[in-house]
Image: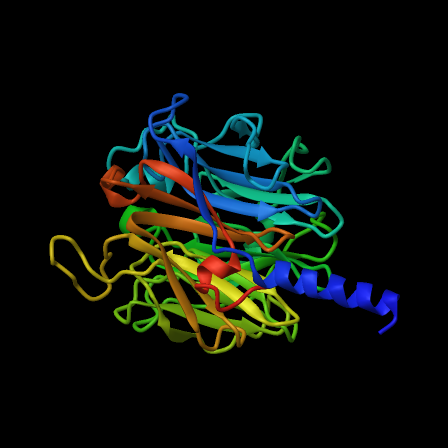
Amino acid sequence: MKPSLICIAAFAATALCSLTAAEPSLEKTDLFEVNTNGYKVYHIPGIVVTAKGSVLAWCEARKKGGDWDQIDILLRRSTDGGNLFSEPKRIADVQGPITKNPFSLRVKGVDPKDVTYNNPVLIADRDGTVHGVFCIEYMRSFYMRSEDDGMTWSTPVEITSAFETFHKNYDWKVLATGPDHGIQLKGGRLVVPVWLSTGTGGNAHRPSVTATIYSDDQGKTWKAGDIAVPCTDDWVNPNETVVVELADGSVMLNVRNESKAHRRLVTISKDGATGWSTPRFDDALLEPICMAGIVRYSLDKTRLLFCNPDSLSRADGKEQPGKSRDRKNLSVKMSYDEGKTWAVRKVLDAGYSGYSDIGVMKDGTILCFYGRGDAKDFGGYAFNHLTLARFNLEWLTDGKDSGKP
């Protein structure tokens, strides 16, 4: 063999060994802790990795704890792969008088003077822009953007008018984006899942339906899609929803719901906005009635990642169809067939663990940002910490799979 070919072969062998010899790795870091910086509870975590590789982790910072109380949106930013983060920074601020959603005043204990910023959603654009949408009082929605990798944000612009189209089919009084992250499709379209409610049921959040809003001009204007999952006897109160683009360019929604089946609902659209398929329950994805996360890991070898509390039990033993189960046993699942089946399941946190979001870094490191705690706090719906778990494919698959996005 010629010397040059020997060198090439040796290099290839070394590279292959370095790829296959990666040890399973899992690290956890607490990013937010209850009763710090003037906030009682941190809830609704979200995470994205920007085009430049920065990690943006955000949440709702709640002065008291409830959905309708005084809430700010805080962001922490890392430029070293999620090792070190900036101090929390408030990123959403709308000037002028803000009216309390009148439906919130039907909820016991709500203070009409509190201002509720809620349901932040970020999208990492391929061109480096970071798009953001959020709501105020579950009644108005706003768009903002960052051109410097999440360090500063534009003045929020109201986009509530995009939701008016939904009134043709659903008389909503309460609206919410996401939460978690949204996505940019291959063609550039920005897609954000939303849920809508008449506000007449529990916590003024029920009954509810799920849909999407989308933008085809880099966030300048937003439009409403079709209702994706209606509220029926079988599909009860579909609400907080996550989204992923499939290999064929279609879009899949994975939907929280309060149905007796206690399974996640799934529906698919060719364009992420219209013509949604008949929703189906995914038997492999348990639904304790809690937010979940979904993201694509890779496309050449198709891998999707999903995370949520994988639990249908209650510590008090009082399980009832369609009623909340204990949020614990946060698990990550992986699909090799675009979500048809979930071949891999790994417990990330066996304790109390709630809302979560999931992202992937360019080197293949997986990020799961989630609520956890040794004891339940705020009625079991928020936890002592928001924690960032960083792990590799080798940890997730017990060494049976390795690779990069």
